[in-house]
Image (cartoon, rainbow, N blue to C red; front, side, top):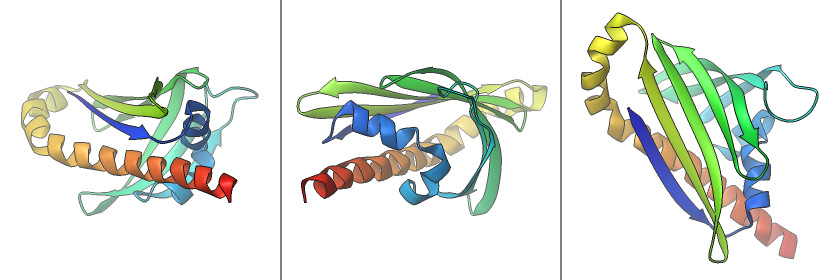
Length: 155
């Protein structure tokens, strides 16, 4: 199952990149994230950055470990997480548009364990709308951070 959501941001791609790669301070930007603990930090670049993220999902606190597997500055990065018999791949990508940027989050769920594979169609039906809503909120929080940063710069 893959869920993809996109928002248009009134700001340059570089500003979007700055916000989405500030993982350590994500709790200040993304309202759904309660805590971030950086576990491994590469000497340079993003690839290999690993962190533990805590959110409230479905009324419960959930903590997952994620790490960046691919990245191209000001273009995209991919994260990977493994939990509950599934591999989760999330891609954050930036593209230019008229007077601003588009930020797209693609969240892919790949069941690995037998029970996860059997439950996948049901879970897909149930969680698709909820996950889409969570992603949209994250993207709107990022949008607000970038656009407010732009208005702060001009003040």
